[in-house]
Length: 357
Image 1 (cartoon, rainbow, N blue to C red):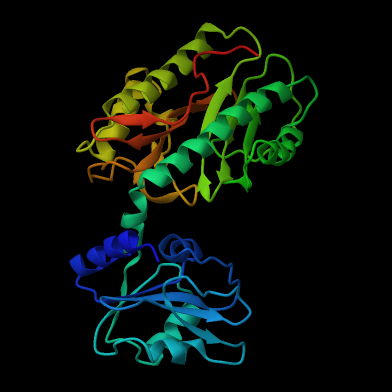
Image 2 (image 1 turned 45 degrees about the vertical axis):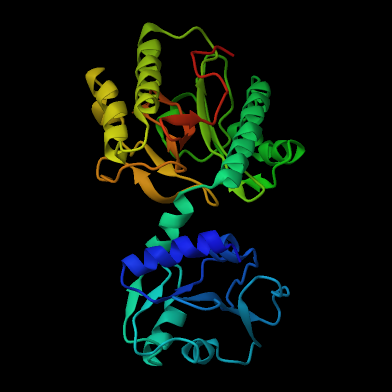
C-alpha cells in the first residue's frame, strides 16, 4: 500500500465529509496498493475506511493479492460479494462510491443497506491521481520520449500509395520495438481533408503527394500514457495553409507560455483560443484545449473555458489547439506539459515548426 497516496485520498474524503469509500477502478486500486487484475464481469473493490487497513475484495480466480497492504477478503463465483462488502461497511454512515461502480453492484448494495447513503466520491481519488509524484513524472517523460521516437517512425512511413490504415496498423509494432507496451488510445492518421475531422478514424485513404498529414498518437509505457499530435505538409504550403498552421502553432505556444501554479485551466484555454479567434478562425477551433493524462489518456479535469480551478505542480495535461476546415484542411499541434513550481515542462521534443515531408 502506498501510504502517501492513501493519505491524500483519505484527506480528500474527509474534506467531503466521508469516512469510507469503495474504489472499483482497477487502475486506481493498482495506484493505491500495487495490485492489478482486470476483473471483467467479476467484482473487484477496495474499501477505504477513515482509519485502519483498507479491505480488498478479490475473487479467488484473481492473482494472489498477498502483499498488497490491504486485508484481503476472498470469495468464489458462487459467493455474494455484495453481502461481503455490506459486512465490512459502516451502515450508519454515507459510503463514497466510484464512478466506475456498475449499477449491477450499486443497486444491490443500496438494497442491502450497506450505508446510510451513497455519494459519488471518485473525485477524491481523481484529484489525488492528478498530482504526479517524482516517480510518475519520470514515467510520463519516458512515455513521451517513446512517442517522440514513434513520430519519427510515422513520418518515415509516408510514401505514395500507403493508406492511413496501413500506417496506423504498423504503429503498435513500432511502439513495442521502442519499449512501450501498446497504444494509450487508437491512433489517428489523417491524409488531406480527412484532417478536418478531429477524431478521424484511419481508413483506406491512400496518401498522395501534396496531401497534408496529421498524426495524433500515444503509447503506454510502464503503466503511463503519452499523447502528441503533429501536422505535416508534403508540398510547399500555400499562403492560406501557412496562415492556418501559424495560428495553431502560436496558440499552442501562447498557452504553454502561461502555464504555472495559480493560473486556471480556463485561462490557459483562453490564451490559445484568443490567438485563433484573432486570426479569424474561432468557430473552427471546436473543442476544449486539452485534457489531463496519466494512467489513462483522458483523465478527469479538462483544459476548457468552464474549468476555473488553478493548476497545481505535478499536474500533467495536453495543450492541443486546432483549426478544422471541412473539405479543405485541418491542423492540430499537441504537447503534454507537467506543471512545475514556477512554470511548466513540455514533455515533447519533436519539432513543431512547418515541416515539408
